[in-house]
Image (cartoon, rainbow over all chains, first blue to last red; front, side):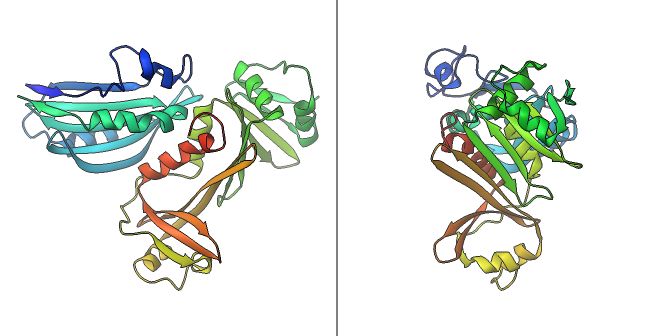
Length: 135
Length: 197
């Protein structure tokens, strides 16, 4: 069991093709993309608790922009939007969804250099919206 | 020259006239770190200009496709010029306007006379409650070759509203989330021809 998603031809395992062209070779401080990380859930875990813990551990270079309860993959989730300043020079976006599904805690992350976010956010969010719990 | 360079901030500081002279030179800027030199290049020949109002002090910046420079007026006739990356500039703008989580105002866009916002009175509820809880009313203007764009926001403890000017002294106020405001803000460079919108 786990989560699965559709790349919608927006993201690729490696940054090649149209997505790489959208990012622009050499542009930005970090690689734009989408990631899905899961670890076994503990009893009592829920999206709100996972989010509270993560947001209370933000470092001084992070800026919380938005927090929103939502639903993802058919289960309750919490979406957060954080800007991270890298070395005082560049700024990176981390839009994340936390949820508990299929016995695991999941963190879904869409990320890009802030200067590329206007081009990439819609595509990355569309990929996130395809997440489904896999039996 | 009495310019001083802060390497960590990629910033050069000096009397206004010396900063102006630095920007008027033709020779490539002999400055370190490279980000500062890139910022000075952008300031000499900017593709876009940004101005933030509604803060305690106006904030101005210029940018080209590679880099940007914040122009920071200081006391005593001095100016600081800070080089930054394109995303670094957007990050500075977001921090300057103190964008943060706010309750969802919800509801449909409202059209009101501009004086209602200017005087913060005379609005029907629930807008009046938002005006009573107003924390900031800021605007970021961006100008590119032959084009201008802006993002204007009413920031209340009760929620965020995007402001759009209409003819005949009226405004449209659209309830917005912080995410939607961020999306509008980061699209500004593209709207004025700096990268894609």
